[in-house]
Length: 116
Length: 113
Image 1 (cartoon, each protein chain N blue to C red):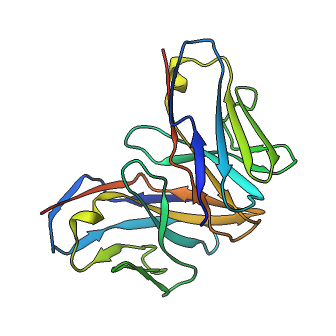
Image 2: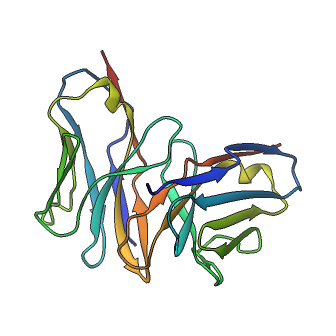
């Protein structure tokens, strides 16, 4: 149980286009979902936290107009990278938990975005 | 702010060797501490956790003890296997409405037969 999927697993796009990444909890309802970004050989950096039906809370330094997060249902959250540029190339990872407070986070396998 | 520092990798060991991956943290308050493991092509999985000082988390032969006096949570295993090859992340959690995780940079472990 507690499986989180991401789609696509990798994507290549041209500079200036937008890319949508989906994160789904397959066998549980995710009250809260998190989006992380991971640079090569570096740690995961939390980008934003989203609760179903409400606006995402972004970490300091993350452009909310560039990284649009939608958590429309208890099993789906999407991250849209708008007007992507090469510096947005990274590994994006989502996680989901079934409640607020101290609940285990379950991680998706990640999506590698390359912007050319 | 809160942060986690873990030993740089990559770490390469022979099968049945003893493993230690160091992790130290800086945090306000009393965080919970975690070790996550990421196998190739898979998402991070919780390996073990400890929620208060002197707690020992253990799983699959791995252990880590929450040391408040040294602000450390070192991961150990007495005899590693090839199947332990993965990237290991130390993390702490700060609960601010939702459980926010702060990760170390990860340590890649390779076990040779």
